[in-house]
Amino acid sequence: MNEFLAMGGYAAFIWASYAAAALGLAALGVSSWRAMRSLERQADAARAERRAERGRA
Amino acid sequence: MFAAFATGLYYALVASPIDYLQRDTVRIMYVHVPAAWMALGSYTTIAIASLVSIVWRHPLADVCAKAAAPIGAVFTAVCLVTGSLWGKPTWGTWWQWDARMTSVLVLLFIYLGYMALWSAFDDRQRAARAAAILALVGAINLPIIKFSVDWWNTLHQPASVFRSGGPTIHPDMLTPLLIMALAYMLFFVTTLLMRMRAELASQRLEIAAERRAMALEGVQ
Image (cartoon, rainbow over all chains, first blue to last red; front, side, top):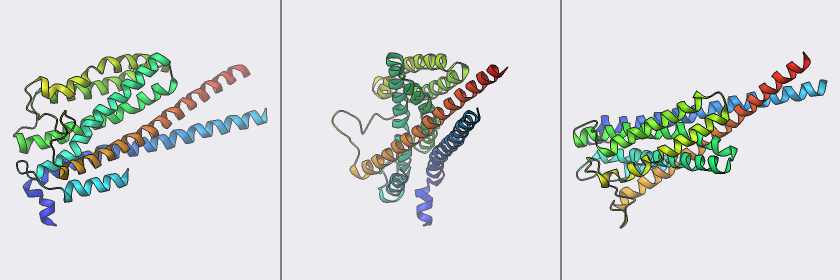
């Protein structure tokens, strides 16, 4: 296990590369998903509100 | 997508052999090269969508182009960072102003400029038009990046997968590379669709706000 983590002496470079790639993609993926969820909820709420207003009129 | 990443990472970190010159640092290739391919792939998506937007005025084309830009920028940044982390132990330098590295850095700036242009206009139509023109002009950089290693005497090595005469890379390394490339591609498609849905929802919100403003005016 330690041998695997040491990566033949290049651990710092290799794990930093994998961490950079993982962090970059994960941050973008999570923020895109959150933005989609929040905006779609707001848009659906606005539509429901409009329908309710029309119903009252 | 998650299954492809899991399989790809297992092959990249455990099952694939070390390189006789690069030793273990060759494993950086499995996160670097797919990032570079997808940096170009994302830009190609934007360029094609921009062309469709200008020629056929399809409204989804602008949504697609706008949604792809941040993903391409992240791929480009990942490509530059991991390339630098590979260059230090292998070449002895973090950075070199050679044609390949410089042209990829230019690509990152084009992405950032493209995103800034989108947010510089209040009017969506005008923003879309200006962004589409910038995207098509910036597409000149794509062949420059691809062929930079052939046209100039670069420190960066030439292509070993997409070259005439077939790949020169051993299957034991080609397999994990292609699995990781598939994972990156699935990530791109998934994130692109999420961002497009977010953009469409924000357009619906904008229209709802306009209608409400008009209704209020009508009451008065």
